[in-house]
Image (cartoon, rainbow, N blue to C red; front, side, top):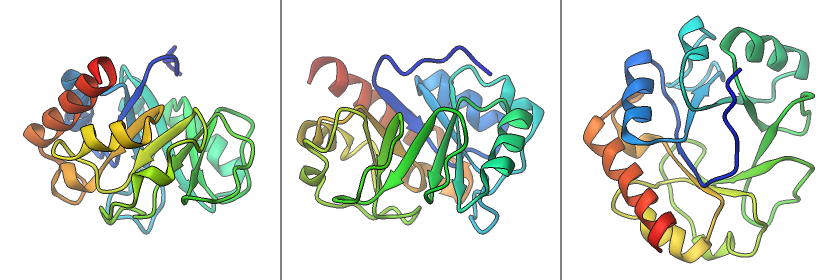
Length: 189
């Protein structure tokens, strides 16, 4: 696992399926890369050795997975964080996926989203004041991430479908625009 920390703002590019897209997102300045291990997702990937080499916070997305299986995948892919949809948490760094207003079970952070990968936005003011470890997700891209950060003041932002040319294939220009806008707003906003 990497020595990636969670000290600064999280700028996460999620749904990465290839080493080329991971490298491109890191080169653009992403601080976290998300790998989707839910078999029903169009961005599903098997744990692979190249994931361990990604020089960013490596986040695995798990939906209703048993903690034992999560830990197997964590070891195979060299993950730093398990982002879980469900209540069973493995014994490691966990970010829980939540909807606005949901109960916040113990976790290092919370990915607030209503879209579940569909790119749907929500009223970002619902995230404001929800806690200091909120990663805002759902429908974010270079055109709206600044406003989302201004409204919600999150710990981080997470984008996936709006950064793609097709499901699972990232578009370099879209990734660069998202990361640059998020970084600018976090630093100067």
